[in-house]
Amino acid sequence: MAPAHQRGRQGVGTALVRAGVAAAKVRVEPWSEHDDEDFRSVRNEAYRDQWGPMPQDLWQNKITNQTFEPETSFLLRDAATGTPVGVLVTMHWEADTAATGIRDARSMLIGTLREYRRCGAASGLIGHALRAAAAQQYHRAGLSVDSANPFGAFGIFERAGFTPTIRDVRWAFEV
Image (cartoon, rainbow, N blue to C red):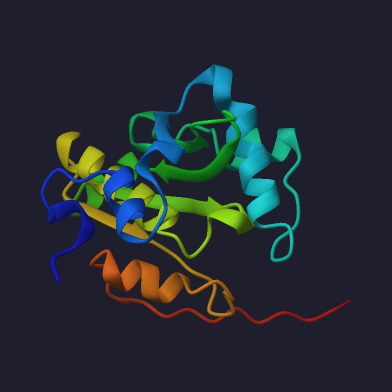
């Protein structure tokens, strides 16, 4: 199967219809300063059981900083209620491009609310972001996933066309 971004002009709605969710149920919106708190709240709810909440000051320091790419970051909303239900945040490091000659769009955060999992929402967001990255002249897209991810992230990313290139282990010691 071709990667999500190469499957014609299908959007999030098409992916959701195939998964049994009506396309009219969701809409994709680009990042805006006005919606920044919606992005953070979806992240906090989506990662509640895994990483815990991210306060506003940490969000600004770690997410919407100088590496943040708003033109390839998207919010998924329930079309009927306007409730934010999914998020994809992209970052880019100019120093990496200068060193390698490769412009890399890095999806640093992909999350959906529980009730929108396993219905194509994350896959649709990824496909949408990959098409946006191609339109913005990125050469490559990348992401990282926690090996303990209980939500099937590996399968979602593989179906989108990603392949593992680096495996990383972090050691910790409680003090």
